[in-house]
Image (cartoon, rainbow, N blue to C red; front, side, top):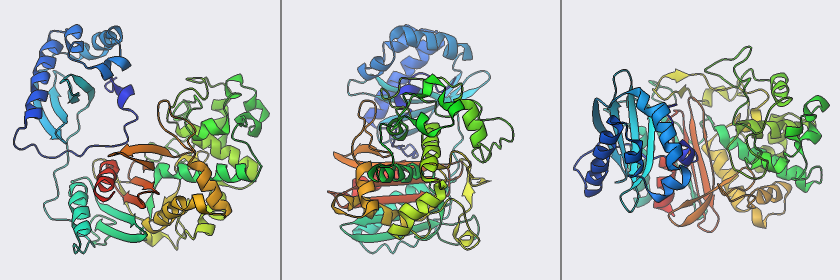
Length: 479
C-alpha cells in the first residue's frame, strides 16, 4: 500500500541516488521545501485536488486526477494527519526525502520537482533508519597514485563508509587497460580486503548469461526466438492457452506478460531468507497450468524473474543439460571464466564472501532450484571484466560465444524500456551503455559497458545496499 502514487513510474529506475548529510540550504532545496509545505497542508486537510494541482506533466501522464484521488482517499488519507516532518536528505540538488510521523506509523516521502517546479517524483515508503557512517575509514587497495585512482576513491567512499556496507570490489576496463580496487572486508572483522578474485553473488546479471545461452542455440539452429515456450513444456502445462503466445524472445526481454513472481511462491518448504531454494519445477508447473497473464505478450515491458527462470527451463529441455553445465560449457570455459559458477565448491569456498542485509546483518547467500537462470550465478571482478571485454569485442569475433553475445546486443524492444536479449540499454550523460545489475538479500552488483567509449565498469558488493549509484557515477567520471 505504501509504495503507492508513482510506484509505476519509478519501479524501473536503474540509478539509485546516494543519501548524503544535508548542509547549507540550496535554492533548489528551498523550492522543494516550499512545495512540501503545501503538500503537507493539503494532505492534512485531505485535499487530493490540491496535491494534484502541484504535480507536473510527466506525473499526470502516468496518473490521472481521478486515479490519484482514489489512491489518496483510499490508501493515503486514512493513515491520518502528518503530525511532524523532518528533512532527512537532499541528494544531487534534486531529491528530497522527508520523514513523516503520523499517529501510528512513520513513513518517508521521496520528492523531486521538474523544471517548472512541479512535482515529478512523489513516493511514500516505509521509513528506514539509516545506519550511521563508519567512524574509521574502510581499508582499501587503491594506491591513490593517479587522478583516476583518486576520483574512483572519492566515489567509492560514499558507498563503503555507509554503516550497512561491508566489502566492495571494483573493476575498470578503459582503453584496454584493467584496474581493480578492493574496499572494506570480505567478512566483518576479518580485515581481509576483497580483491579481483573474491567471489560474490551477482544476482540478476545471471540473466545476461541466460540470454547468451538462448542466442547460442538460436545460432545453432536448435531454436528460434519466435518459438512459443509451450513447445518446451509438458503437455499438461502447455495446454494453458494463456501461455501459447509467449515466445522465447519475450521471456528474455521481459515482455512475456508473466507476473514478476508466481503466486504459489510461499508454499511448502519456503525459506524467507533463502526464497528461491525450494521453488522446484513441480511448483512452477503447478502455477503455470492455470496462471493468467498480466499483459499481452510482446506489448509491454515488465521485469519478471519468473519469465527468465522459465526461459532457463526451456533451455534445459533444449540442451538436455542443467543451467550450470550450459553456462560452464558454452560461456565460462571458452572465455576462461574460472570462477563463474552456480554452486560454490570446497575449493572456491575460501574466496566466497559473507553477505549482509540492508541493516548490515549477516544473511544467507541464496540457493536456486527451478528458477536458477534468473539469478543463481556467483562470480568475480576478474571474470566479469573478461566477460565484458568479450561482449565488447563480439561484433568482430568469429567464435560461437562471440556470435551469441553479439546477438544479445540487438535491440528487441524499446517502448517502455530499451532491451536487447537480457540486457538493458541505459543512457548516462549522453552515452548508451549495455547494462545489467543484480541484487539479493545480501549482495549488490553492477555491470555496464560501451564499445565506442572502450569502457566497462564492474562493481560487486557483499551488502544489499544498491551499487547502481556508485556504478553510474564511475561511468560519468570515466567516460
